[in-house]
Image 1: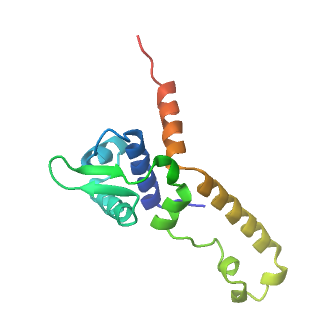
Image 2 (image 1 turned 180 degrees about the vertical axis):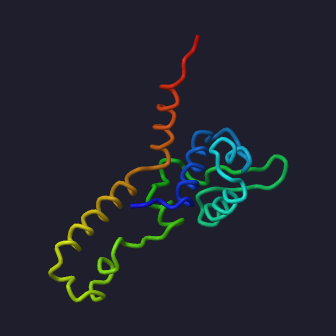
Image 3 (image 1 turned 120 degrees about the horizontal axis):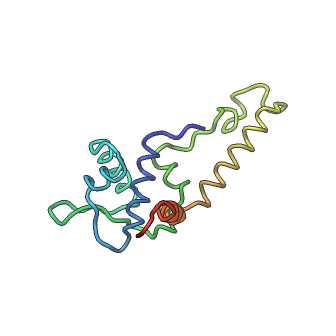
Length: 145
């Protein structure tokens, strides 16, 4: 499975916002800089995330982006479905009539299992989970003197 750049950037932006949850809005430029994402592309991704209710955005000097929902309520499955769609790995999984071999195809069964497993992981992992993991990973690399 290959993750589209749009999904990667969207998830990284949401995790960044989750880590700052409750601290006020964050500018596109700040998110782009901290996550090494091209700002014009991030702007497009954030626009989609706003349209579908994941974030709230405000223009102006005190503007920026904040999460519109709790980080624990936003699953990766929701984000992937919004930014990428829900296409199955093979057409016959969504529409068995597309292939005359569907009813007796061992390969199809394997791909159905793979798809179900991926969907399960995406739907049970939240932006809040990722923000916590990120905080833990960053914390492991910090040394204080």
